[in-house]
Image 1: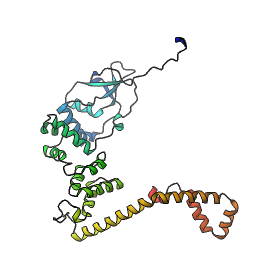
Image 2: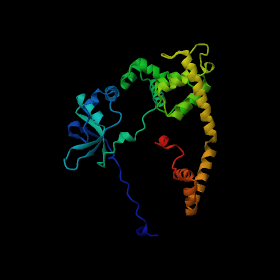
Image 3: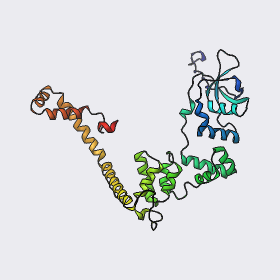
Image 4: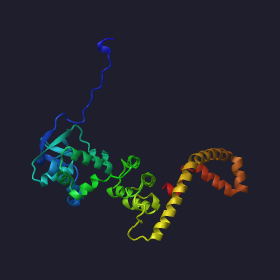
Length: 306
């Protein structure tokens, strides 16, 4: 085949210019206004502390203004640019986008889970970053940093693997460490099934844990505001709940199959006008229930589906 007949390969359009550019902050035009209260937020203080300690890690994204030569539209990094202005900086290294769409890039970023943050901290310390400097960069005190570094000591590998990408706070892992490894795995599964990783929920699981499944089995459980009688009742209720969940999990596949088959059969029956007429005269309550089953789009009741 001759060169003239070869299919032309489509050219690849790059999303960014190949080189970063130092842009005067005065030439950067924001595409949205920051709320007045943003400078009082924890996020603002944390980013400011990080920039002061280690500089800009994630470069702002700008695009060249089509009508004002030498000016740029700020697509991403409004907080970072505002912090630099407050620090008295006059320019910042930027990525230059070839498109002027505001993608709100940070909404596409998966935030670090507590376990991932823990590993990041340990790696930084192992690479020679002092705890004091790391704490300043994260805008936390050294004691809080040390608590996060020790967070996983005593958590079994299986429970950790279940929760490694979940939004578990440090306190949740501290509660888990009070339980034996097998109970930690059960507790992690309960957290996942409820999609609730909060420390109060983890504490409720701890309270309902039998004494022989605690690391310090000889030490009575103590929770502020709860009597031993209330803890005993929670322990029995959660054990029953776990038993019910296991029973439902074992039957769910078969029950769902039976419901699907029944729905298909009833749908076929109700497509017969003579059967519908018969039921409407003799057993209207059956017709109503059959119609509800045929119209179902979820195996959950209407309230739960919402």
